[in-house]
Length: 142
Image 1 (cartoon, rainbow, N blue to C red):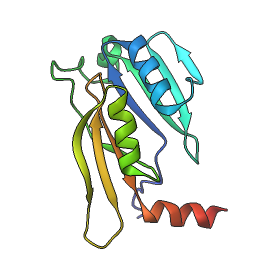
Image 2: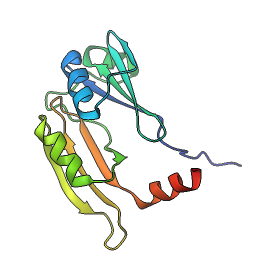
Image 3: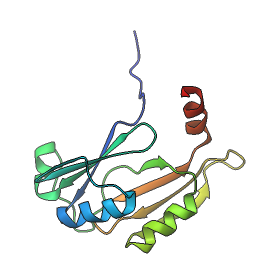
Image 4: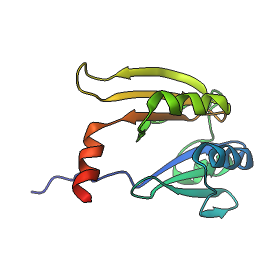
């Protein structure tokens, strides 16, 4: 019997109760406009493998089996995106309105895996990680 595998990040969807403001904020954070932009859902392609970061208008969250964004705005998993400079990314996100969630820390001493997270202005938790494994995989794909 073959076990299912997580083969890599494809799409991460964040929810916001202010869809237009979320699109504008993420465009500033990422430095690109959404490649797909319909009422209620927008998507950015980012990173070395063109992963998809989606933004769902909170009023449609129920259609995906979820609930409208809770009052504190936080729910779900933290997804970590590889970045070359964790502190630099945290500083940039905070400078445009995010709040620090977890400061940079090495997940396992001596491993080189350093991660941190912020809460965007809409209550979503974004994780940033310097991940040596990601870089090894990327180097092998070249």
